[in-house]
View 1 (cartoon, rainbow, N blue to C red):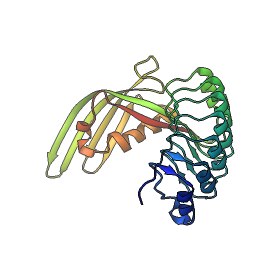
View 2: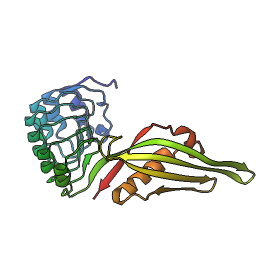
View 3: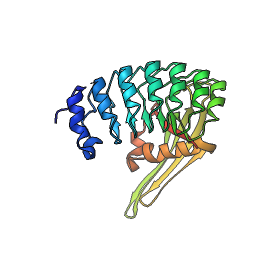
Length: 268
């Protein structure tokens, strides 16, 4: 079926009839949804992936607040205070990763969401917004933050339920130490110099690490000097394992000096 640009009452009714297919509904390109369609889809307890909606009326938000289950509205770049207040009553995970800014009133409302809250598009939040989000009970994603005051950081440290933040990682140098091939296999040893920051890179907040990588046909080992502390250690280890070293023996050539990556810091 052709992906609709607008989700109307007829389309919503067609999919609500078959709950098994609702989670795979071709709504990923739909830019708009009518108020009536939102009211109908809210009856489902399946995942609603309305990820490309660019607008949402206050009436539609009120209807979707009655939906139970995961709701993705990641295409929205703005959200009215009234819509946020309605969505605060949603029971289930809520994705709003397209928002790059949000009012303090809207943040206070969204902090009441009963489920995971994904706001990874925000690059900054006010002290008042951080205080509100600290009261959210559930997983909270703020991986896009590039600036955070000490007051806001202290507030977020009180959040309970899992807090996801972003760690920016820049490769500033790399050195090939040894590469060999033989009848018994292959070996590769190299080092990377990186700088990391939870804020903007190239600031006084940057921390420097040397990564030593040793690969053979039988194993892959890496170490960081100095050893990162706490949640940074896990974030950087996962970045190495699942991103930087994914290409195996081709990893050294694939990693570019000056490349910037994002590691995910998770604090329970």
